[in-house]
Image 1 (spheres, helix red, strand yellow):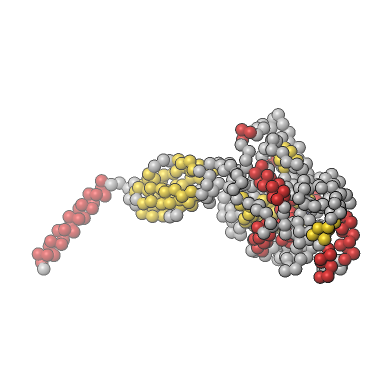
Image 2 (tube, protein in one colour):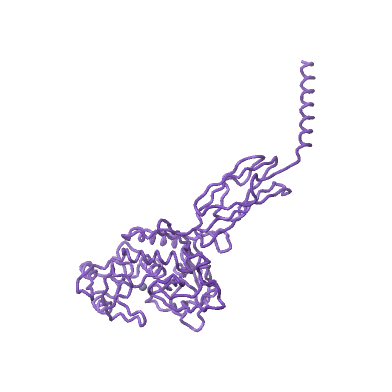
Length: 434
Ligand SMILES: [Zn+2]
């Protein structure tokens, strides 16, 4: 026993000695094996980092699109990093930093992800931010209940996904603010304001101070900005700006800009406004004030669609017969004449008698005299409002791929664009639709 014990102590001492010797030869070190910078394709990608070291480490990323699958570890190891497809407008960069837990050692790898040139197969994921403007914090129409706006966007997505044509787009509640901070409440930005109501026309830019509400806007090349507030005119459900085109990528009906200006030059907040009076107006049965239909309709305008009915492009006169939406597959009709009929049928509370519904769904094509059923999302009251046509889908697609101040990858290349401001002037035309 004694001999054995002495032997054990000797072995232990030797091991200890070897151990100390080893540590002396191997100073603490930590490195990511390979290049200090990487260029990545625009698609979903998984990369492997080879970490070499003998200390505890922490791995961090500066961007939400670049996610290491381990954030800490010890010694040499391999860590996979998930890179999501680049849905922004240019190339983008992120940094991965590995550091020892005592912060004495650190190394950084810079990642550059190339820009995506969209093609017909590109699925657009459009980040949405609702700017909720409220005077009274406890008033839930103004300070909308948490989670409600996400539900509305889900419902709009369902409506768009089942509209009869493939739009190749989806709205998503923004996960991060413009500074890259994670949003506690995705897609929602709340502000207390002094006004009990706001004139929606002034808000959109028709008043003396068209930039008044620009400060609330987030970069429209990264987010679709939707404002909810109490409209002064309770009869208006929503209002939207119309998109632009930039030379040489013109499209019928869109104001053409000379050059791709920074969004801070915009003379008004490029956005959709929704009247919070109707923010919970969503029933199993159709109501004229349905907020999901309103939002789907206003987003249609925001993405380049005009009303399916006849409307003079300059005066907005609806007592006309013009195919004013640039889509020949949406039959047109005289909206003024229809409204007279609608008013006569509707009861004072806005509800429509079941028997009258079928009748009210019908329209008369003012070009051909043929009857048709109103199903288009860009028509309203009274309509099934659940369809887009192929030509409408093509317009939306063109806007997504070409228009400025709309999120998502664009076809245009910087070298194809008239570059300088000094020789050209942009003329922004205020075009809105309710
Ligand atoms: Zn409209």
